[in-house]
Image 1: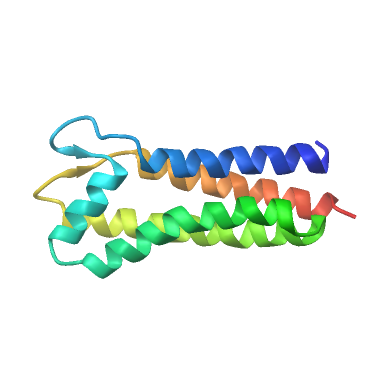
Image 2 (image 1 turned 180 degrees about the vertical axis):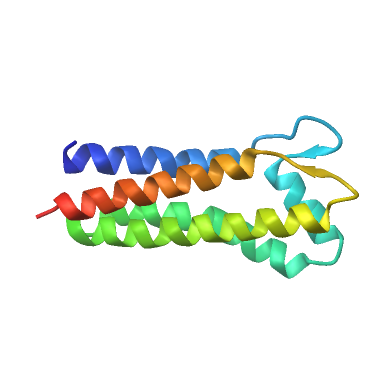
Length: 133
């Protein structure tokens, strides 16, 4: 793949990560990402939920902007770091929400998809970094 193709695929994955945030859950007990953040905030973890949601929106946007504003080698390095941070934040929040909301609601598999896409994007960004001159 060329640098341009890697950059486009990484931007599409990042846009998909932001889009997954808006998907609804499957019902009353199976929560989507936004519903999980709202419910997690309602049980007393408001600042945690706000920090996660801010990171879930801002990190992909910063990664996309980095691809357009930075030089080729730097944009892939920044994208790899931000994608890894996103994967870590999503994994930690989903596990915490799953434990804290155990009796009230079920956390869906959207988080697993988000973590998988973020790790895939990390690998893609590393590939782009190594192939950039």
